Amino acid sequence: MSAALERRRGDAEVTTEGWPEQGLRWVEDLRKSAPGLDALLTWAHREGASRISFQTGDPVWIMVHGRNRRATRAALSEVEVSAVTNHLYGADGTGRLKGGSDFDVSYSVAISRTERLRFRVNATPIHTSRRSGQNLVLRPIPDMPPDLDAQFVEPEILENYRPRGGFVVVSGSTGSGKSTLIGGFTVAKMRDPNGHYNIVEGAAPIEFLLDGLKGPTSTIAQTEIPRDLPTFEAFIRGCWRREATDIIVGESRDGATMSASLNAAMAGSTVTTTIHADDLALTIQRMVALCPGDERDNLVTSIAQSLRLIINQRLVFSTDGKRTALREYLVFDAPLRRRLMQTSPSDWPDLIRTTLETQGQSYRKAITRALEKGRISPAVAESEMRRIG
Image (cartoon, rainbow, N blue to C red):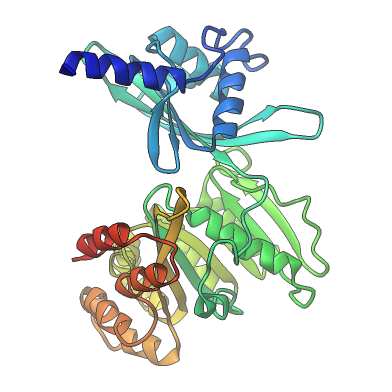
């Protein structure tokens, strides 16, 4: 078979798997009616998509269990992408992107009186061969996170994810399941009859709306950044007046947020946050780097004193054709915190790598255990072992 015929055959195979209602108008009435957008998102959700991408000059693509599939035949025009952008954000959505800013919002599709699909949206300006463009990535948000058993959370994490005060960090790349893991932690706390937690969460956007989950002894209040409050710093500052036992900070991405989070943890709250980093040693390095220069010495000391648990997570292909989590984690008990205090922050990554060999779980251990339990194949295990070197 010729290469050209092979390509044509491949295109036909992709097309037959695409969205069956192609041709619907994406948006009919801004912020009110988007028949094409809502129909595609509903279809993609039913296909099991974890990512839906709209990009100027490209067809719509979806990712299902880590594999990309083309959802539409035709490429999206600049006008079509702008219409979707403005429907998701508001009339100035495209103007915001052209002005050099991105945005994060949530979007919901009503498919019945009692059922809604929710998506988190990131919109980013891009440059194409012809002109500037837009990339919109939507990721489905389940109504409830899977419980901790379904997420294969390790026993040592279960014993240590809810300290009474201190800093808990879940790190990983985008789409590695950080928010899902924290959501599982939160639901477990809410359902604990002996918990007596007052949980407040700030997220951009909120992943799991949990106000309908009525805990026997615990409460939760959720704030979306920047719709309800302008910044994570403002959210954390307000938590001081609310007697929160647990503060969830959706992402520590800047110095102001890291500083406020550490101060809250030092004041006695349990602060749980996410950080983008590829392994556990890089996570603690990233935490130090986020500390503002004029406060660094004090904040580095706060890190050493307040850390209770760091979990780094990756999703890999599983034997059931989906994906499963591998985790590297370390519990920061009192002796380890004292060692941090006695060690230069520049040497913390090496200290963490060494400590992982004697306590906690390295990725090497996580891969071996997942293979032994049949969650991943030998080929995936070999690939992940090469990745960690």
